[in-house]
Image (cartoon, rainbow, N blue to C red; front, side, top):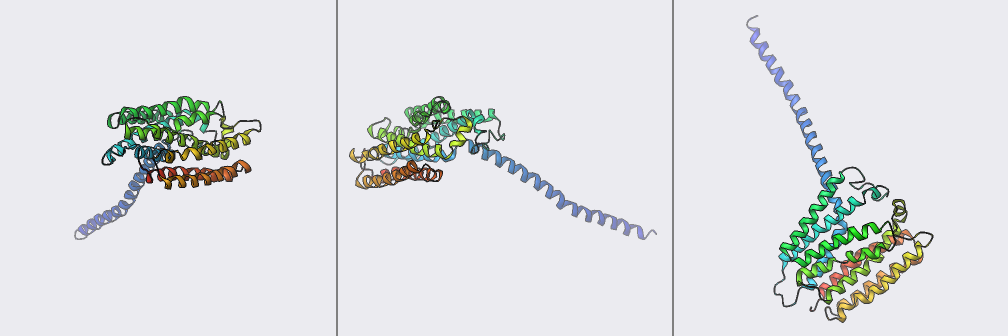
Length: 331
């Protein structure tokens, strides 16, 4: 009996260790599951904040600012100022992101009524409105201060003016009049001016030509969106198009009228001597293709062609600005 006791004790210890070895992977798996769940929660929160900033809109804004900066840089300015361009883009992105966030904060109740926006972070209930308000205000303030300190006061002023007019004038007018697009086009065309002011320190005629191009471009772009989602807008009480059966005619005239003005205005840089013949014929060709899609939508009034016009507008703008930059002659 006494000889078997140590053996039994050893067997008991081995048995406990054996069971513990099998419990350890289970505990590790539970811990790993908790970590993965926390990571997914944080990733979802970060993605929601990213969505608030409207990154798809910001991309076109940054392209327009880049074009304004490059074209506004004087020929005798010496080496290209990449660091100033970097500061301009960062500061402008912060203000633009703050504008997009504050816009979603203001429109959160109406976004909940539209299918295409109902799952945004605020109407979807994933973020508290107070957090979005604070986030948007912080981005805007930091961006404006960043531009003022590291670029110049004029660029900062134009960026903050864009924010103020977009939120105070355009946003509430969307529920009051179909001519809200006209009002919104004024702040919407500011990005090239911000870039030009950052590079040049003042606004000359070339800057206002860029402003005019972007101003006119917005009408076919936003009319295509308004036509694609017109039922959604009506559901939320937005007057992007008039009622009473006039919406088709209004959309067609808005598109054709402003596109016919856009083509000659887009050729002005060549007449002013800022670009050469490559840009002239390239812009003429791009404008003609763009107009082709606009005419097709105006005649057919179909959602499919509205989507094609929207895609054409997204392609047109960077190509026109890119051609202008590639064929720049002087300021």
